[in-house]
Image 1 (tube, helix red, strand yellow):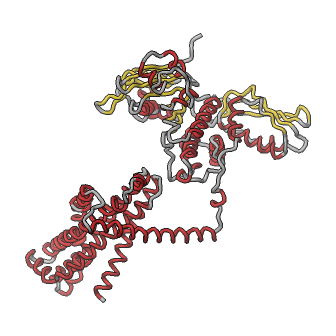
Image 2: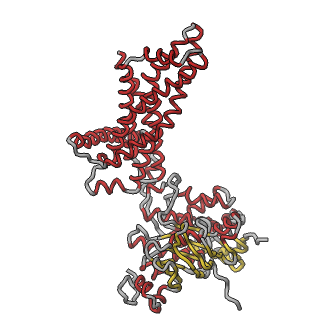
Image 3: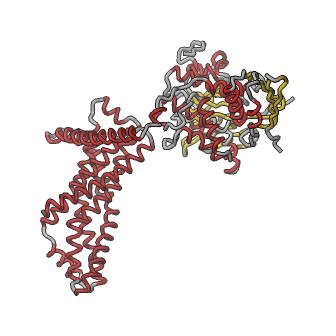
Length: 258
Length: 371
């Protein structure tokens, strides 16, 4: 029996801004249902890698594969079809400030489905209730706290029941309890929706709490230094840079979730 | 072909209702009408269970359907057993019912008309108070400048001077030339009937110097610079840059508002002189090409018709307009909320406020001078 193909594969990817190469030769694969963390220090290109995966920035070289489809070789329509299967939670939430939460969540549904308005309303209410925002349908993003905005953005990201969920620094700007609640929500949604989750973060507590697989990007060597389960990397990785990152510079190979 | 979503139900005994779900329940498929099922949930039904052995695929579509059924069952106080549902669906239903944030604004959204009028009045009063306080802040920030202590960076000031002055010249040239042409054209049509076409030069000259030069350059700068000030300060408000200034003890009014206002106050009279000249030149084009006047004749007539005090009147107006545009642009920017939408609103509001202030102040000044 052959193993199922990876849900997402990155092959020899080079990321660059003009002539400035950010990262090169990135190759890794993400299995269906994984919680995959892209980690590394500030400015190493984590968010840029995410942008390559969700179709916002074409690679300088290499490819991104969704199943057996080479994403950047697809036509515009093909890429739109693939992106429809992805939900993205941006670092700032990126809710549209001129729209209410209900309108924010409804927009992808209106754009991609032909559901009647009454059903869309029900779905919006349900999605907002999933993230604990029942009754906030008519609120504008500016009227909410940072944590609530992030959860509302998550409701928008899961509006179309995506196969892939991308998170850019989900815990940024959140207090520890909100960050932990968000981690638990991500886990719960992954279990319930069966989605593959890709997270950009450098929050070690989150990484150890939820990640099943990861890649480490290094700013100095401009390439990946390790890939695998972060807990395993912590115990077995011999690379000093990775170990330094995973142990917060202490060198002690113990998991700290706080 | 995608198997359609189906459901059947049966009563193994009068108290027990079993719902079987099958097929594909996704957003791409239609949902069957649950009306018949809901109708069977009467007072005799005590237990509700689900069977999903025939279920092929599901997403939110199934959950919405289940929520309708569950809500109806709860109303009838029926005991619901969800264990027959896919584990993911069970978890999502549980998650959706978990107690989340409490909406504290629920009641305010449904406020009565009296409450809304009251709120509007309070908001209006608050805005007037803010606008007045802002004038006070500007005056206070201006005082150190009088004793030679600049609260802002000279570099910033000169960059604003450049934006208000040199960079505005092309658009002021175009508009003023065309205003001169329009004034001249309108006057020519009437004055030609009396053989008094030479007085077109008087009309254009006085019109530009007394009113149109100051007014048009003011309106252009309100759209170009006033809007830019509101957007700049609004974005700084969104990015908490203004808060950062306050926390290190620097007055945002002195540091950000004052150089902008001074730049406008200095540059607008110069732009006004430039607009006057361009307007007169625009008028001369019509005079020379349509009214058989020579350029020298036209300019000489213009010179004779304008007095220096009249030029001063236009310049005074433009200096006032400069202050008002700077005030409106900076006020709206400083009042801006913390969202992209608020920046847009601040920008629009700055332009509208500037133009209203320009026209109102122009009327007042003209009235006082000619009284």
